[in-house]
Amino acid sequence: MAVETRSGIPLSPAVLAILLSLAEGEKHGYAMMKDARSPRGGGIAMGPGTLYGSVDRMMRDGLVEESDKQDDERRRYYRLTRRGREVLAVELKRLDATVAAARSLGLLPHGGRS
Amino acid sequence: MNVRMEWLYAQALRCYPPEFRASYAKAMEQSFRDALRDDEMPRGLLVRIVLRDLVVSLVKEHMTMLRDSLTRPALVFNALVLAGIATGVALALYAIPQHVLRSGLNDPQIQMAGDLAARLEQGAAPDEVVSRGVRVDMARSLAPFVIVYDEQGHPLASQGVLNGSVPAPPSGVFDSVRQRGEERLSWQPVRGRDGVRIAAVVKRVNGAHPVFVLAGRNMREVEARIGDVQTMAGLTWVGMLGLIVVATVVFGIYSRPKSAGRYQTAAEKG
Image 1 (cartoon, helix red, strand yellow):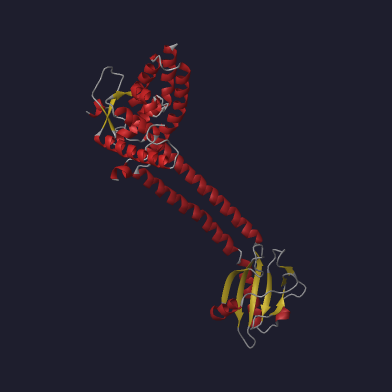
Image 2: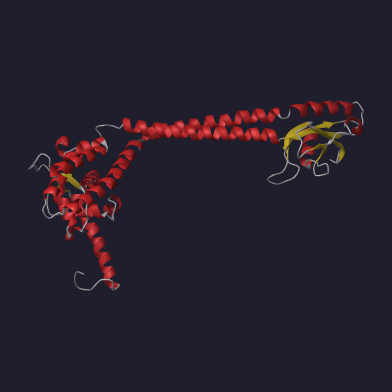
């Protein structure tokens, strides 16, 4: 619960998409944008301004951090922090409960993805 | 084509707050460059995404910068102190002229009530000292008038009339005058929002037949002037608060701590 009260859960679609993207490992800006746009990232069409604005706020909240990885001095890589991973888990659990509730109401088919 | 779009995007990035730009502009340009070179990204979709992103994130980052700039405790405290001073000055701008105008309104009545009381104390009858030929419509005229009341507060002689009759102040006024000798009051003979208001001076006349003397005059003109003063003081107050807000915003932006660490890169922090 402490994580929920401090981390702005429910997360915004952009923040959730960034956390999901970084859950796979360190990523640079465009890789995160591309992941977010894909179906598994939530289909979020995010531009560089939204991405880096969100990343900046997530860094201040301790959800992500910049990594030392550098393949191009203009590219900046980011990774999840332990806290970011905890927040992501809490948010996914919340979403899972919401989906389960929707299934119980007959709004989604049982036993698989819609 | 790509070079031109990169150049245009780089120019658009100049609209972001300076610190955000200093930290992320290069990375944003690189992300845009990567998107341009991505064959899976339709050019039209990219342009739409970036245009919408520019508008939304520009507003958001400027709002964030303003919030960070203006919520510093020292800045908020200074603004509140200045707002308090401005409020005090505006209240004084209203209260002092209002007091001077209102108290000055009593001047002729003080003299008239005093003169009338002196003549009555010398034994003159009320009918003699109150000019019978003078009739002042209390609702319309700004001329001062006098009324003499008996011990019970019933009118004995009057120059002033309101709606065809002579009104009397509440009995509490006479009780107070009995104890203190004189009262200066704003009297509203007929209750209601648009009722006539009279600046009245009431004096006690002792003797074999004690009476009360009231000298009054309509407050309409002076109340209009007081209303003007109130409007000017209110506008001054709003203007001062506006100046404080503008000055606080400008000062807050230009006095932001440059090393707040908010937009530092890993290399800078390291």
